[in-house]
Amino acid sequence: MMMQENIPVDVIQVRGLGFPRDQSAQSNHVRMAVRDGMRTETLANTAVGVARTSDRILVLGSGAAIVPVLLAGNLGVPRVHVVEPDPGRRAYLEQTASVNGLFRIGISVTVPLESDPTLLVADLSEEETLLPEALPSGSLRGAVLRIPDDTSLISETFARMADAGLTYFPRQSSGNVVTFLAKWSV
Figure 1 (cartoon, rainbow, N blue to C red):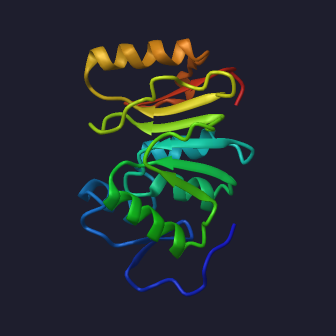
Figure 2 (cartoon, rainbow, N blue to C red):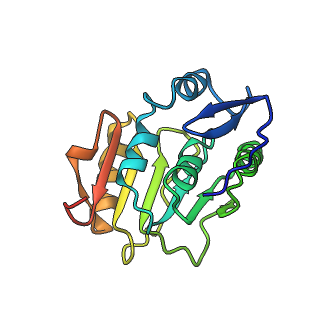
């Protein structure tokens, strides 16, 4: 885990990591979660709890960079790839990764063809975040998803996870953040 010593003054410190203050990249909910040390950010906390340092993690949508930065920075996962179509959020993630010296976070607009993740993390409640058409079922050992309120999308998500060989894991789920695992041992 590489972190720079000289972190700019305009960052919020969380768990030893710096998150630049950026009103356009962070909603009020996210800014409050960052300020309180991420204790209330269920998706980030669940992803960190389920992830292993040996995982190859695919994050769909960077949001405010919290999930990928915590996975790479605090957990030390060496292979985190983020798919972020929004140029503003991509720039914020690049800035946050740079501030923290996390140069191993890959960033792209679409899911790379060579993608072979073992863990999928996504906030599907965000309108622009969608599951890829073909999920990598061979290597995928788990998924942590914030699901939307739309009942038909919830059913579709559960069906897609089952098709990928994953089963709902209630012990690692909370509210609208659900965990799916290939095996029930964490």
